[in-house]
Amino acid sequence: MSMLHLVPTSSFPPAAAAPALSVDDLCVARGGRSILRNVSTSFAAGAVTVVVGPSGAGKTTLLNVLNGLVEPTSGDVFATELGPLHGAESWAALRAHTATIFQDHALIGRLSAYENVLLAFAESRHPLSLLPWPRFAREAAAKALEEVGLLDRAFERVENFSGGERQRIGIARALSRAPRLLLGDEPFSSLDPPLARRLGDDLRTLAVRKGVTLVLVLHQIALARALADRIVALNDGRVVFDGPVETFDDAAEQMVFTPPPSNRKGC
Ligand SMILES: Nc1ncnc2c1ncn2[C@@H]1O[C@H](COP(=O)(O)OP(=O)(O)O)[C@@H](O)[C@H]1O
Ligand SMILES: [Mg+2]
View (tube, rainbow, N blue to C red):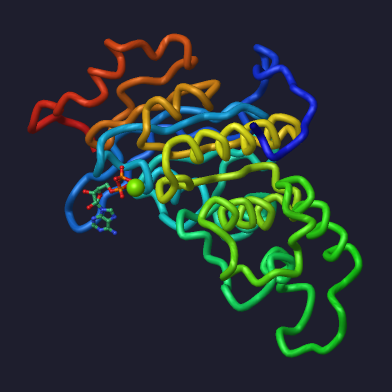
């Protein structure tokens, strides 16, 4: 049973949904090695895209390009409202409405759940300030905790929470700033499969209801199938599958996990 009580929402965005974000002929090389090779794909606004692929395929690198942590060697990233992202200013604009859910939660154990969510607004208050947090931040933090079903435990220390509950707090923190783009790099990998599924379902429901564009890297294919509208698969730095989840059949899955031929050309 879901801990959230949400009205079910249609899972698919309109067919004509514009991409919130797209990448075109993206190449990333590090230390003389190609990590991403000619990657072109898009992430539809308000939809859930799940990136899958074997370990070392470049999934984390792709996500880190989207959040501005990794600079592409060549190629472009476009955001619908910002155009091609060139220069610090446009990346800062994208980051301002992007949030990330971390695998390790990145929470502070001795602080309460509520205080951990408030840290999303750290720039709105001096760290040593004795003044209360601004009202808008307090309201957003309380609402986000309510959305993940933890408002009644808001003032308990995070160290007393279970792994799944901590992940909910991490999700609340990510959602509290009302992002338009939400990224997660294997956010449920420390949880057992049934709990990962429950949390994934809840995250999907929240993202769809809020119209947030969600991009998740997941290594469990069953979970990817359950949560995705669209699957993008990488193998050895290349896109080897990109399509609606219904078309990601067993043959596609097998192909994604087949070792690629060596000495392939490309960037
Ligand atoms: N900064 C870096 N310098 C050199 N190699 C890197 C760097 N970052 C990642 N890699 C390599 O690139 C490949 C893809 O990494 P990653 O994107 O983390 O893959 P995945 O998330 O699919 O497992 C791996 O072989 C990794 O070792
Ligand atoms: Mg990774």
